[in-house]
Length: 415
Image 1: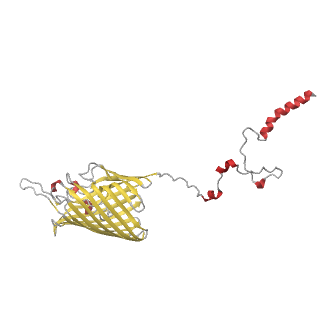
Image 2 (image 1 turned 90 degrees about the horizontal axis):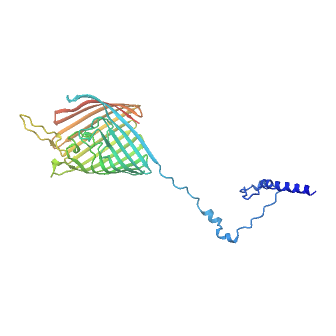
Image 3 (image 1 turned 120 degrees about the vertical axis):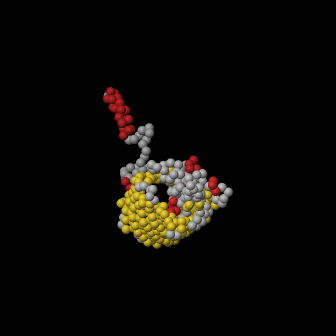
């Protein structure tokens, strides 16, 4: 009998651990899962009621009303992300001259450019790097240059640029490739080094105002002026302390119909060694207007300059010969400029006509350029354009000569 009882007792001891594990009774109990009261087992004994917080826990007690009044925690602000945009393009240029006779035709890659724009939040860096296989102008440092390059702060109403940026004096451009006389006198597409503050106020439709305030310590030495027609191509000369203001009120009926007016003023010092001791202050004023009515646009601008900015234009010096002495060049300190143009767009085609002129009042010389053009936009990234330039200079009424008579054909690709 004792042997039987001993075997039964041993079997119970061996079965006890398995029973305990099956009931979840271990040294580290598993986390209890809250059960839905609606699914409770009616045969199960009711759980012992919670006696409530102990006196020792009174300091940790929370007021439900205060917890309900607290606003939900906002997620931490996300860090600004780096944004980078990279674009580029190039112009293939065929030039067929007719006058002057010494000019020869050529085909070349006029310029290739790369636009880089990187920003973090409201701050960023932009530059336009340009390159070609020859110098753009004789006074350029080399065949590669920075057209524009600046750090910026951008806000919906204002943008601040610090570095090299385009002057916003006068009407910005005439939509052509060849450009008006103003371009060859260094007035349009003229980048300089300093600070530019610009912005707009108004809505998509109705009244709108664009404004520009710029101060440049020194010129950028990379505009499109011909040698002798602007300060920067004169050896040792620079334009300094360039100040520009422009107001551009406009009314927009919709995105395709608008009237834009402009008033601009510019001051700079022409630092020319040959004019040492003379008044170096130069003032320019301009008013312009642009009208857009659907596929038709028209623009016009008048401009006046007061102050001498070059030494030998529009009358260049004549070197001495074996029989004649040298004749010095002459410049004008009072100049009036004119630009009138328009274009019509039908499907992928555009027809354009520009007329620009200048009157060098101190010496009585006048120049005119007529420039019709026809273009075809093959797609959003490829444009074809043919322009005819008829540029003459007149030292007196009825007397004149060609500065340029040519056809310019270009293909512009942009991505």
